[in-house]
Image 1 (cartoon, rainbow, N blue to C red):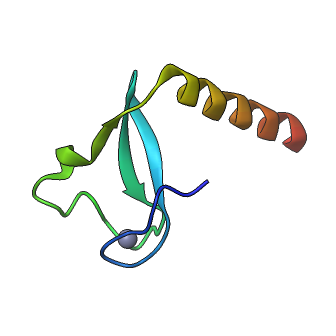
Image 2: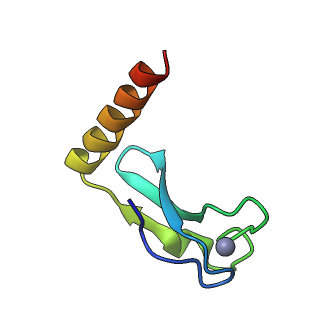
Image 3: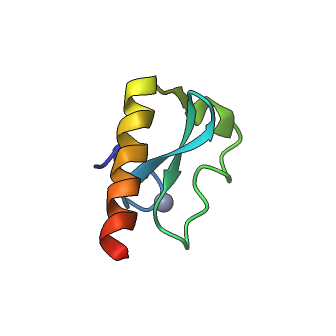
Length: 68
Ligand SMILES: [Zn+2]
């Protein structure tokens, strides 16, 4: 699932959970440091609903099961 495109390199953005209920929108391109090179990186934190976190956790679990 994509959360938009990086304004700096055009790669997909991904929400990364940094705290309970807060995610940081980060670029998936390892060569791109967005949003850490932005002065207002904290404005990229978004409130994340429990349901969304659960869904992401379940997906991760399912992927891990498939890899074993
Ligand atoms: Zn980027």
